[in-house]
Image (tube, rainbow, N blue to C red; front, side, top):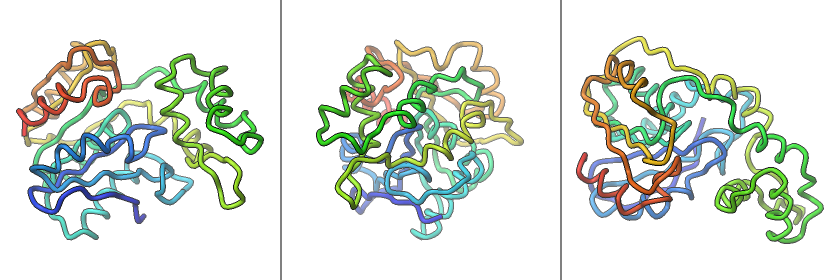
Length: 253
């Protein structure tokens, strides 16, 4: 699948960035711009997200193959790989399946374990709201209030709503495909090998996505792992404390 991507910079080691569920490459603009001072950065829309094509499949194997296909098309043999949340799991799976392609690996606030279904209300919002009835972004935000109280999360979700060719609002992401794959997306990754490259797991200090009980399995399959906790940050580490986040990346890289 030909994924949509954006390139920042033209010199330095290639660095791919993968977003989480309901996200898109725009979420990483500021971080990518900063990192492009030293790396050639590629932010990528996962299949069924953003401007990438839609497909009935959304599992980790096909998402991993998409990234490798993109690297091949760009004639990039080896690259640094960073992913957040669902994108972090995708990155871990790529490193497990294609270790020879990954120079260094960064997983942002995610562990390769099963999580509770925490996006059910968002699926309901995308499915139940009549987006075509709205004419302004303010109306979209007001409609989302019934499903999410946090304004920052609402703004994140609302990026999935765009004006279509008819001039009305509609959902950009392929919600049926994501819903069908959701059990796998939140499920445990069962690794079959060991990734020997340097690896960084970045945690939000106020997040609970990764804890001490997760570390033994991580270290079993990613033995050269460092863990760093970013203060004053929750699950969206890169948005909550970008300065400390970038500093941690630069120290690792």
